[in-house]
Image (cartoon, rainbow, N blue to C red; front, side, top):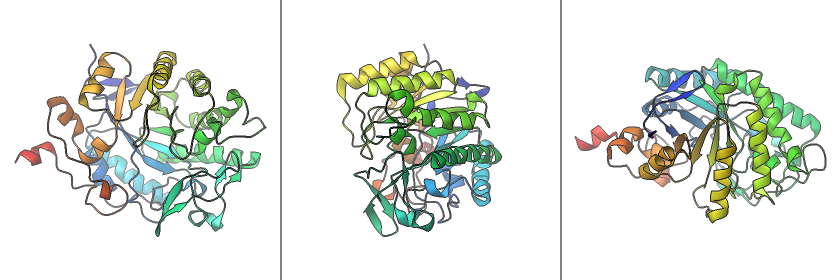
Length: 363
């Protein structure tokens, strides 16, 4: 019987357990998008994860949606990430970068020349973002032209190449949580009438072309995709998520990716009951590769879903944020630090690199 704490092979990468670290936005990067000075400590502290997926990292200046989030489109950003990756590798860890474009979840003041955010359709989300002055409503987006789409796909390719230059072990393409790729996938945010809108096969086209661009840089086993089929965060919704996301998985299966990362529920969301469970069972059966789940798992639920073969790994978010040695704590029943929500987004080392390990707790 497979355990949450057993190793797993991802392509030619040997991962020491199935307790993965989910991407966690922390808003501690420098204003120019260079990862913050404490980030190398933060990530290396968590190197006991089977795999770390970095915080969402914008692929271009137009991909930015929040204050003090990191990018991977400049030399300085690549150098900053390279330092982090080296520290993780020195601690015997493995780390993928999550490639991110926020699409319509942005504000003019965050974008070059006060530009309008890019989106599949000119539909303003009922959502907010964060500026230096606090929370504000997102700006009205511009519907992307074909030239915008082609340029953005090229931005993904360049970001993937930059990730390789920074030394990452692989990349995860963020296609969840109401950001740009998800906006193309779902009917509430995509009312295009061209080849990128309408039927599910058209709405999945942008994701497919982004993945193909990334695969021109990385071997397929080093690429994953994150989706959130029933997610409502950032004003999302789809008329037929079963059809849409079954088509997503069909397309991704054909590309032979390393893994599929499925967000089952985000904080504050109400699970969709039996319908949601049935869709996840279907996607698990349909997917040919490594299947990762995320969404409120503890040790017991994580162990159960692995032993029942309903997933191959579990990505933990807030628990990993507060417990740098989470795999050991889960496996041996150690006490768990309580996450300090006031320090989740922005700040200093408090609530970032100062959470104690289990040994420090018992001394």
